Amino acid sequence: MKGWMGRFRALFLVSGLALLLSGCGKPYLSALQPKGEGSEMIYDLMLLSIGIMVFVFVVVMVIYTIVLVRFRQKKGQEDFIPKQTEGSHLLETLWTVIPIILLLILAVPTVQYTFALSDTTPTTEEGNVDEDALWIEVTGNQYWWHFNYQNLDIQTSQDLYIPTDQRVYLTMKSNDVIHSFWVPSISGKMDTNPGAGDNEMFLHAYQEGIYWGKCAELCGPSHSIMDFKVIAVSPGEFDQWVEDMQNVNVAADEDTLSPTAAEGKELFEENSCIACHAIGSSPSAVGPNVTNFGQRTTIAGVIEYNEENLIEWILNPEKFKPGNRMTNNYPMPSYEEAEKIAEYLMTLKPSDIGPESAEDGVYLKAKDKEEDTTETEDTEETEEETDDTENEEESENNTEE
Image (tube, rainbow, N blue to C red):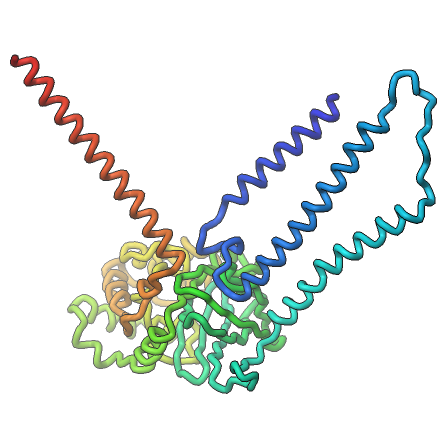
């Protein structure tokens, strides 16, 4: 009995943990809510394999229960031996053929989807090679991502803008160690290897949104926070974003800067920040491109985007991302200087197309939901305060009477 109770408790504990952990995660960072072609294929395979496992489990448990009940030792039949089935051709055929059928049911779509996901040959609806397909070169670095839009003369870091409803093809490499590019809501994952040739994959987002990505390969002390975002906007908005990014004119924008931001720009150049962090298209930059830094939703991929955190990041990047290659590689500015540089960086908004343009995205929906919840709570609190006030007034009136 103790053995059964122990097993039951262990099963209950594992089931509870599985149920609890299945609730972890966020809608914009989950393979269980597919929003793209690649993630949908993977999700379908997961459902198929889970369905087969559940079917096998149920059949085995039913047979086990029948055997346990029907052939249990009964009183007065201690010496009874039931009919033996050893050598039954029927049973041996069944438990050989059935697993083969189940494996085929799982293997055929798995092979089909594997070839489909690895096919990075752009094709038109007529079946011809699509010469106008959008190719983006992805480079993994410790601990950030760089994106080079081929033939468009556009460079970005951390935020990858793509159009919806079409495939975007990626060539992938690494500048240091092995990383793994993974956007679970819209695709599978792909390694980026240093000096071992480029890997390729494609992204295809069905709807607008901000989809969070992570590095899925242990690459150093800040591996777990090597985050980035894929911002999917409508094709028309993407074309406008491309045009705006191709026409970045830093010199012309100087007139619009506040005096503090203008000083920050000078400090940014005098302290050699510009030597690593390019504004505009510069493939030779060794640090993250900051052309549209003012439109990011996070700093360094994971820190809440605000001026205070940006100043803290400039003064002490090691505090947020241990092992990053920015630490101790530039003249340390004073707090006042960092404040001016931060104000300048936050003015870098070359396009009206930004994260807020992804109106139907799951990320924004989640934010809206949180805001709605906050508004509802505020409304309830206001109504409660109103009720309390009315009750107090009523009580005072009764006392006067």
